[in-house]
Length: 524
Image 1 (spheres, helix red, strand yellow):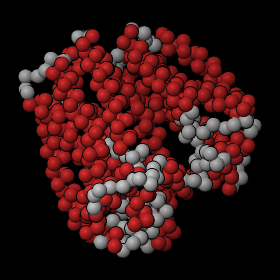
Image 2 (image 1 turned 90 degrees about the vertical axis):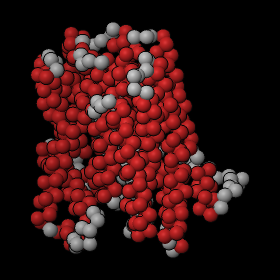
Image 3 (image 1 turned 120 degrees about the vertical axis):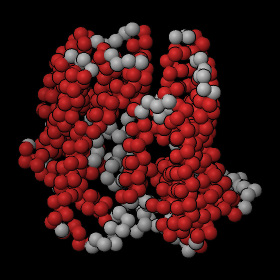
Image 4 (image 1 turned 180 degrees about the horizontal axis):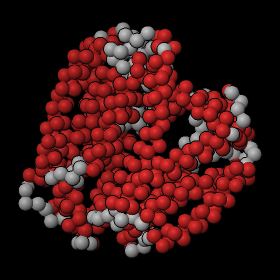
């Protein structure tokens, strides 16, 4: 079993190293210097292996620390102060949700396909060795941060030690149930395609996690200890069942080759492309009164309304409902006024991340390429500066107007909630709240469209091949996520954020107008 794990790890590492080398070659300026024989360079392969090991180590810890930081931040937001019982309660319930969504065993990845289908490795040895390695990473990933919490947040040390073990037990219990379901129904699950029951369970767990403390029902350390003992017994039983299961080869052959769940024959890009194509509305009466670039863009928007405008409208309706619930809650419970007022006057940085999540820039530019630019960029006239800049201008108008639909609800809702919860001595806060949210929405619209035109990441086969594009995407996410932890006065942060959005947008638009005619082209 150890030898099977070593072989599979080498296979995965080789794939990762080659991907790293390819990514290095794709950076601007570098790709013109480095030769194609780079993959045979021993020094670079050693460098790639070091990066690969670092990725493995970071992957072990990063997700866990981000989850714990988010959990702690949410406790401060919802309950105003950190309470160990709140932490234990929320962690206990959310770990069940994590077990449902992330089993590893039922995740159809390429390295599994290469090892089990192409190389015909022993399915049981491969699966068990890699599965227990993934559980070990969960244990190691959580343990040091839990111990730190026991020192700095007064979390009982024995609870800090039990919580990572509890997560492992939950994951094994979920996998055991899935294996039992497979033996009974002869149909393997795919964790990348969660069922409706799983999603309903996740929603219920989220509601119980953050809702029960409001009615003073909390899973404290004593209740958790009882739950842990039960999960430990069931986890050990599940371990035995997982270890003695014999049909891994048959199960994985179904998972990795089934047309409905295939992760190899159809990569993620192809699946996305198929889903985008299904949502195009072909109607004979679809037309436009506009001319030129505006005519082409309006037809595109009308035929892709399911992807573009309908999604934004749904977001707007949900935000209206949330706003209505917030107003009703304020009217019914005046004790919430001080907490909400404080949030509105100090938590504006948090809304940077919310606006990032609401923005449809990535989805819209992806649809633009797959159903428009993918074909038109093969024609010489479409690559001329006048056409590129003309389409850029029309698309920018569309993207801004779509993103402003949900953003306007937040922009109006925040000053309204501030007023209803006691207001503020500085009346400029009302204006800043409105303007800063609108500025953020416009900023993200410009950011994603400019990024698309300057870096154009897609190949003729609609695969993303730009390392620079991925890096910019990742940096955007992490910067926005970092904003969650900032606590700054609304007036000053909102003013600075608005100025930044304006300056950035001006610079980005200038770069797009100067460079897009050279950079906006099909990748090979």
